[in-house]
Length: 69
Image (tube, rainbow, N blue to C red; front, side, top):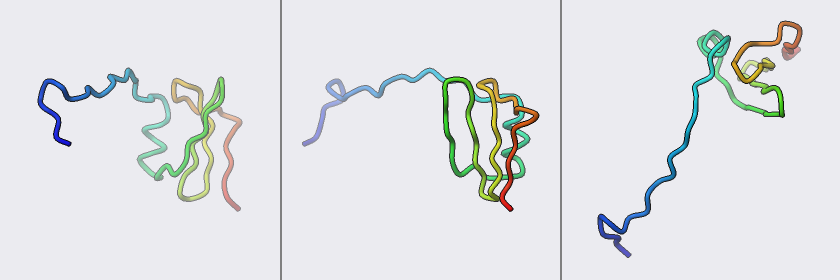
């Protein structure tokens, strides 16, 4: 059923910020294939099997990095 111009549903407006920190360096060399969130951190999984643990500013935890073996 066609909808007239004024009666169209408006898309919700989402507020977001791009991740900074180390994310740009990570995504320049690897493709991100999964993302997991917790209350304090996020984990980025890549196509090469690496897991990068980051804070919500995008800075990688220096002691938290796993790689596929």
